[in-house]
Length: 136
Image 1 (spheres, helix red, strand yellow):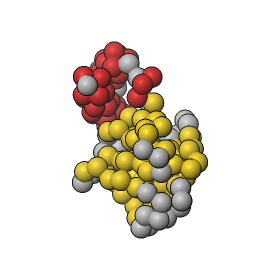
Image 2 (spheres, rainbow, N blue to C red; image 1 turned 90 degrees about the vertical axis):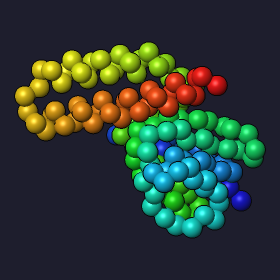
Image 3 (cartoon, rainbow, N blue to C red; image 1 turned 180 degrees about the vertical axis):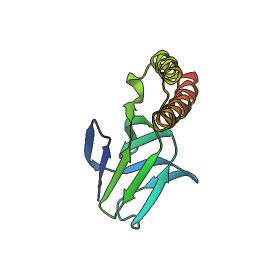
């Protein structure tokens, strides 16, 4: 028995068929999802998603916060942004944070300010998680 895993953002969708398990950074802690999991909707915090094929890690993604829709046959994660962790460079995240701060300095519309502040917060959390991962 296997599970279909899908991760969706406004820019990209990736699907993995026939996975054994997925671990998700739930808002209340790490969550393991296997075939026949109970149907539920789970809030996610920024962190690392691991996809397993048998006992081997197939892929790892670092994500912004989002939501996971889990059924017995499928796990679909919806996030604003995600990256395959091995392709991620913490220096790029640092540059993104600087760029967001520069953009924030030139904004005078409250809605745009809130959006940039949320991007800064999420990217800082992703950077923290990436640094912890690459420390190992």
